[in-house]
Image (cartoon, rainbow, N blue to C red):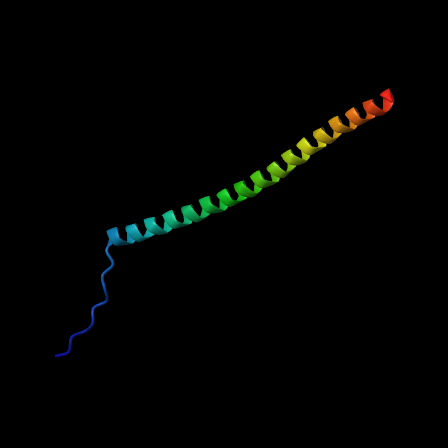
Amino acid sequence: MTEIPIPPFECSPGLRLTAHERIAEIQQEAMNRRLDRLEMMMERMEKRLWLTVYGVAAVILAQAFQSFLVVQ
C-alpha cells in the first residue's frame, strides 16, 4: 500500500505569529517612512532658518554701512 502524502498542518498559533510578524514589519516600514519625511522637513526648516539668519545679518550690515555713508 502506498502512503498518501499529508500536507503540513498549519496550526493557529503559528499563523497568528506569522501575522503578527508581518504587522510588525509593516509598522516598522511606516515608521521609517515617517522618520524620513520628518528628516526632510527638518532639513528644509534648517535651510529657511539659515536664510533668515543671513538675511537679518545682511540688513544689519547694510544699515551699518549706510550709517557710515551718512556720517561721511
